[in-house]
Image (tube, rainbow, N blue to C red; front, side, top):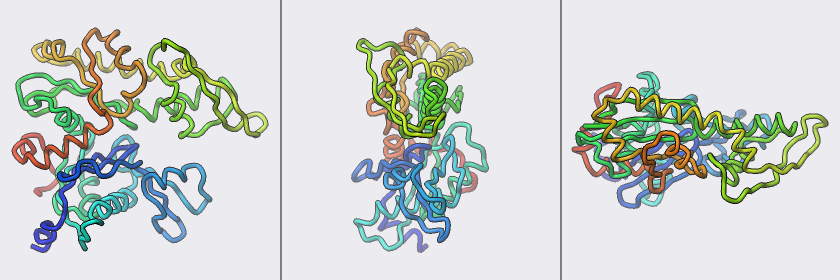
Length: 347
């Protein structure tokens, strides 16, 4: 009864709980939060020092008693307490303008396709502990398709390749459900690790995750560029331990990430091979839609199209597809009832 009363003063939320970033959507304002999924904790006092962008700045720069923790690994919660605190922080931040004393919103959260019942319950429990009165779980690939306004409830195939931070999800959707799918641990973070390893082997130099991500964003590409580009990177010399700077070009970055890109493309082919022929003909006609931050890599769509021989389209604003999909579901209860994932308990 109290939750229902408090719910009248709370904003319903759509949440994309990602390995790299967490996005929050409200029906009246759209996307209100887009911040890194990072929490800085003082281990001596168990105090939360920073969440999101402020916490991300601390990665690799903290003293021993402060930890910048990423509570999600491969799209699932690895640190329950920190994930709960992060969600609570974002929920309170959304409601801070309304002066809501105890927010009790309805929440729709995107989850990976290969999530277990235990992991699913962890997401539900974390959201409820953070203040949600009702929690609905929706597969991220389904939410991404809905966010792209694709006909997910029709007898027509929709193929989505969602390349996030921790996972790549390849799925074929028809009649409000996922028909065939494949989940890989090769995604944005793996590309960063490839670059770190390459720099280590080629230049005897150690760089951090943020430098590797900066290299990927600035000069990374899946196939050759019209005009070659390079950049200077700084790190620690592995031989003498002193600071070191070197030049790296787009060709070297392509060499570093090529194996991971090839694995993603190979798994798109495997997913197509296991898809019913009637749906494959739809996919040939409609094409494949790419979503997630990983698809912003230069020429990735061209490389996939060249190998798969199917039209490829990058979604409008691929970073926000999932959270926009949860936002649409907040205002469409009929569609939500058709596509919601089974809860671990009756809500």
